[in-house]
Length: 334
Image (cartoon, rainbow, N blue to C red; front, side):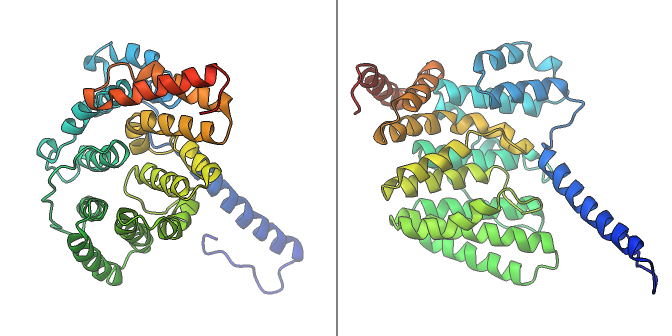
């Protein structure tokens, strides 16, 4: 550690001290990684808003936003929070349009592109919205450029364009094989898994989806593992879907409940609300199927309490949640 070595013949107490120091430093790093939220501490308004969103206190989040963007140090958090609350209220198509490729700034360093890319894909997967046309190309080996390209390949696989998905997969394999950065190598391992899962999910090969994504989910808590910002929500949703399709309802519940935990990264904070209604709705159904009507009631109530202004295409979700909640209230398991 720090290039220090024990001198030959050093007393045992010094050797023990060095070992203890190495252990302490390692544990300290793990502890600090577990606390990392990646939200600037000086941005008190942003922090407060995202805390409310993570806790599901949507009315309080609305009141914070009502103060207007002029009180915000940056406009991006305000826009991201507004999109989340639109999705929570049921205005899915409005949010999907807000993250369309045509609206994404082309500045390479702009985090809006990163958030918009995964947001659009989540809305397509969770709510079945038709995907945007994606004509992005791999212009360089920078992190954002590669993320854009990865998500294009994931989207292609999920919508059935396996030719395009395979082409992107092969090009990224070549990049991985020539990577000189350990961080990039770890990132490619996750990215290629996400590219591989699309065709498997599309053809309904749910055991293969689990084989691909279960190791990914286990790595999500490891600091330093490269991810596309927010793709843990995509992974949890697909794992929940796979387990549910295989009749493994308890495992499906575990993955979907994990998607509702307090976010750890800034990009996760900025898209948490996009998946909230879909996850709540599905959890209500799954808890009901395993006979846990108490938990089912909690999720249905949370969904109905916020999904109050849905697009016409999603009114069926409100009607279905109300019907199922009525059945539970009458003491009958649907």
